[in-house]
Length: 193
Image 1 (cartoon, rainbow, N blue to C red):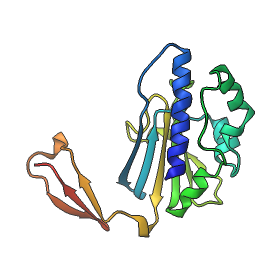
Image 2 (spheres, rainbow, N blue to C red):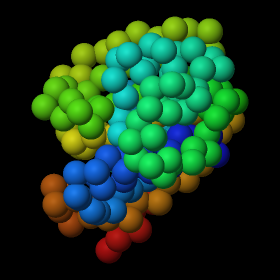
Image 3 (cartoon, rainbow, N blue to C red):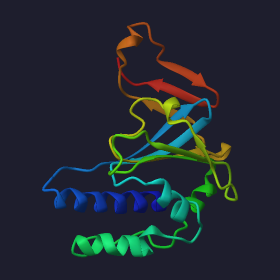
Image 4 (spheres, helix red, strand yellow):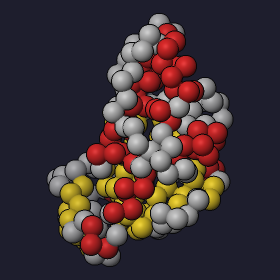
Protein backbone atom coordinates (compact mmCIF):
# COMPACT_ATOMS: atom_id res chain seq x y z
CA UNK A 1 0.00 0.00 0.00
CA UNK A 2 2.90 2.30 0.65
CA UNK A 3 3.88 2.20 -3.02
CA UNK A 4 0.33 3.03 -4.11
CA UNK A 5 0.28 5.97 -1.73
CA UNK A 6 3.70 7.18 -2.87
CA UNK A 7 2.63 7.12 -6.53
CA UNK A 8 -0.60 8.96 -5.73
CA UNK A 9 1.24 11.52 -3.62
CA UNK A 10 3.77 12.24 -6.37
CA UNK A 11 0.99 12.58 -8.97
CA UNK A 12 -0.87 15.02 -6.71
CA UNK A 13 2.29 17.03 -6.05
CA UNK A 14 2.85 17.31 -9.81
CA UNK A 15 -0.79 18.33 -10.32
CA UNK A 16 -0.41 20.99 -7.63
CA UNK A 17 2.47 22.49 -9.62
CA UNK A 18 0.49 22.28 -12.88
CA UNK A 19 -2.32 24.16 -11.15
CA UNK A 20 0.05 26.75 -9.69
CA UNK A 21 1.49 27.42 -13.14
CA UNK A 22 -2.08 28.26 -14.23
CA UNK A 23 -2.74 30.41 -11.17
CA UNK A 24 -5.11 27.81 -9.67
CA UNK A 25 -5.28 26.68 -6.07
CA UNK A 26 -7.20 23.89 -4.43
CA UNK A 27 -6.97 20.68 -2.51
CA UNK A 28 -6.11 17.43 -4.28
CA UNK A 29 -7.36 14.24 -2.66
CA UNK A 30 -6.03 10.73 -2.23
CA UNK A 31 -8.64 8.20 -1.15
CA UNK A 32 -8.30 4.57 -0.07
CA UNK A 33 -11.28 2.27 0.29
CA UNK A 34 -12.76 -1.19 -0.11
CA UNK A 35 -15.34 -2.24 -2.65
CA UNK A 36 -16.86 -5.23 -4.35
CA UNK A 37 -18.12 -5.87 -7.87
CA UNK A 38 -18.54 -8.76 -10.30
CA UNK A 39 -14.75 -9.22 -10.23
CA UNK A 40 -14.64 -9.71 -6.47
CA UNK A 41 -13.52 -7.75 -3.42
CA UNK A 42 -10.99 -5.01 -4.04
CA UNK A 43 -9.00 -2.32 -2.31
CA UNK A 44 -8.71 0.92 -4.24
CA UNK A 45 -6.54 4.03 -4.24
CA UNK A 46 -8.00 7.02 -6.09
CA UNK A 47 -6.15 10.30 -6.54
CA UNK A 48 -6.72 13.65 -8.19
CA UNK A 49 -3.19 13.78 -9.54
CA UNK A 50 -1.97 14.33 -13.08
CA UNK A 51 -3.24 11.01 -14.42
CA UNK A 52 -1.43 9.08 -17.16
CA UNK A 53 -1.38 9.12 -20.93
CA UNK A 54 -1.18 5.91 -22.94
CA UNK A 55 2.49 6.74 -23.60
CA UNK A 56 3.25 6.98 -19.86
CA UNK A 57 1.42 3.68 -19.29
CA UNK A 58 3.41 1.91 -22.02
CA UNK A 59 6.82 3.39 -21.14
CA UNK A 60 6.64 3.31 -17.35
CA UNK A 61 3.63 1.63 -15.74
CA UNK A 62 3.92 -1.61 -17.72
CA UNK A 63 7.72 -1.82 -17.57
CA UNK A 64 9.06 -3.09 -14.29
CA UNK A 65 11.93 -0.95 -13.04
CA UNK A 66 11.07 2.08 -15.21
CA UNK A 67 10.02 5.01 -13.07
CA UNK A 68 8.45 8.07 -14.65
CA UNK A 69 10.00 10.12 -11.85
CA UNK A 70 13.49 9.11 -13.00
CA UNK A 71 12.78 10.04 -16.63
CA UNK A 72 13.93 12.99 -18.71
CA UNK A 73 10.24 13.82 -19.30
CA UNK A 74 9.67 14.31 -15.58
CA UNK A 75 12.93 16.23 -15.13
CA UNK A 76 11.91 18.67 -17.89
CA UNK A 77 8.46 19.21 -16.36
CA UNK A 78 9.92 19.60 -12.88
CA UNK A 79 12.43 22.16 -14.17
CA UNK A 80 9.47 24.26 -15.39
CA UNK A 81 8.10 24.07 -11.84
CA UNK A 82 11.41 25.22 -10.39
CA UNK A 83 12.26 21.74 -9.07
CA UNK A 84 9.32 21.93 -6.66
CA UNK A 85 8.50 18.20 -6.79
CA UNK A 86 10.80 15.82 -4.92
CA UNK A 87 9.30 12.40 -5.74
CA UNK A 88 9.07 9.73 -3.06
CA UNK A 89 8.44 6.89 -5.52
CA UNK A 90 11.60 6.04 -7.39
CA UNK A 91 12.14 2.44 -8.38
CA UNK A 92 9.31 1.59 -10.79
CA UNK A 93 8.18 -1.47 -8.82
CA UNK A 94 5.11 -0.03 -7.08
CA UNK A 95 2.53 -1.90 -9.13
CA UNK A 96 4.52 -5.13 -9.05
CA UNK A 97 4.53 -5.08 -5.25
CA UNK A 98 0.72 -4.97 -5.26
CA UNK A 99 0.64 -8.60 -6.40
CA UNK A 100 1.62 -9.54 -2.85
CA UNK A 101 -2.05 -9.00 -1.90
CA UNK A 102 -3.87 -8.99 -5.26
CA UNK A 103 -4.45 -11.42 -8.11
CA UNK A 104 -5.65 -8.76 -10.55
CA UNK A 105 -5.05 -5.03 -10.89
CA UNK A 106 -7.13 -2.50 -12.76
CA UNK A 107 -5.94 1.04 -13.48
CA UNK A 108 -8.38 3.73 -14.59
CA UNK A 109 -6.70 7.03 -15.43
CA UNK A 110 -7.26 10.33 -17.20
CA UNK A 111 -4.41 12.73 -17.86
CA UNK A 112 -4.93 16.37 -16.93
CA UNK A 113 -4.32 17.44 -20.55
CA UNK A 114 -7.03 15.09 -21.85
CA UNK A 115 -10.03 15.95 -19.66
CA UNK A 116 -12.43 15.93 -22.63
CA UNK A 117 -11.43 12.37 -23.56
CA UNK A 118 -12.63 9.16 -21.95
CA UNK A 119 -10.33 7.65 -19.33
CA UNK A 120 -7.97 4.78 -20.07
CA UNK A 121 -8.85 1.49 -18.38
CA UNK A 122 -6.24 -1.25 -18.26
CA UNK A 123 -6.40 -4.64 -16.49
CA UNK A 124 -3.52 -6.90 -15.51
CA UNK A 125 -3.97 -10.50 -14.41
CA UNK A 126 -0.71 -11.35 -12.64
CA UNK A 127 2.80 -9.96 -12.54
CA UNK A 128 3.80 -11.31 -15.96
CA UNK A 129 0.69 -10.00 -17.76
CA UNK A 130 1.28 -6.93 -19.96
CA UNK A 131 -2.35 -5.97 -19.53
CA UNK A 132 -5.35 -5.46 -21.75
CA UNK A 133 -7.50 -2.42 -22.31
CA UNK A 134 -11.20 -2.30 -21.50
CA UNK A 135 -13.91 -0.04 -22.89
CA UNK A 136 -14.20 2.97 -20.56
CA UNK A 137 -17.87 3.24 -21.51
CA UNK A 138 -18.47 0.31 -19.15
CA UNK A 139 -17.12 2.21 -16.11
CA UNK A 140 -19.35 3.12 -13.21
CA UNK A 141 -20.01 6.89 -13.14
CA UNK A 142 -17.70 8.64 -10.69
CA UNK A 143 -14.93 6.04 -10.90
CA UNK A 144 -12.55 8.74 -12.04
CA UNK A 145 -12.82 12.51 -11.96
CA UNK A 146 -11.73 15.12 -14.46
CA UNK A 147 -8.14 13.91 -14.04
CA UNK A 148 -6.31 11.42 -11.85
CA UNK A 149 -5.97 7.70 -11.35
CA UNK A 150 -7.87 4.91 -9.61
CA UNK A 151 -5.99 1.66 -8.94
CA UNK A 152 -8.11 -1.34 -7.93
CA UNK A 153 -6.41 -4.34 -6.33
CA UNK A 154 -8.61 -7.44 -6.51
CA UNK A 155 -7.65 -9.13 -3.26
CA UNK A 156 -6.33 -12.64 -2.84
CA UNK A 157 -8.72 -14.74 -0.75
CA UNK A 158 -6.65 -14.48 2.41
CA UNK A 159 -6.83 -10.65 2.26
CA UNK A 160 -10.55 -10.30 1.54
CA UNK A 161 -12.36 -8.39 4.28
CA UNK A 162 -14.40 -10.35 6.81
CA UNK A 163 -16.57 -7.34 7.63
CA UNK A 164 -17.56 -4.22 5.73
CA UNK A 165 -19.09 -1.37 7.71
CA UNK A 166 -21.51 0.56 5.50
CA UNK A 167 -21.96 3.99 7.03
CA UNK A 168 -24.17 6.03 4.72
CA UNK A 169 -27.75 5.79 3.49
CA UNK A 170 -28.77 5.51 -0.14
CA UNK A 171 -32.10 7.15 -0.94
CA UNK A 172 -33.30 4.12 -2.86
CA UNK A 173 -32.99 1.85 0.20
CA UNK A 174 -36.10 3.10 1.94
CA UNK A 175 -36.71 2.07 5.54
CA UNK A 176 -36.85 -1.68 5.06
CA UNK A 177 -33.11 -2.20 4.54
CA UNK A 178 -31.39 -5.17 6.09
CA UNK A 179 -29.02 -4.26 8.92
CA UNK A 180 -26.65 -7.23 8.49
CA UNK A 181 -26.25 -9.33 5.36
CA UNK A 182 -23.64 -11.61 3.87
CA UNK A 183 -22.03 -11.05 0.50
CA UNK A 184 -19.94 -14.11 -0.35
CA UNK A 185 -17.38 -14.31 2.50
CA UNK A 186 -17.93 -10.74 3.76
CA UNK A 187 -20.46 -9.64 6.37
CA UNK A 188 -21.91 -6.22 5.46
CA UNK A 189 -23.20 -4.19 8.41
CA UNK A 190 -25.42 -1.18 7.73
CA UNK A 191 -24.30 1.22 10.45
CA UNK A 192 -26.99 3.86 9.94
CA UNK A 193 -30.47 3.90 11.39
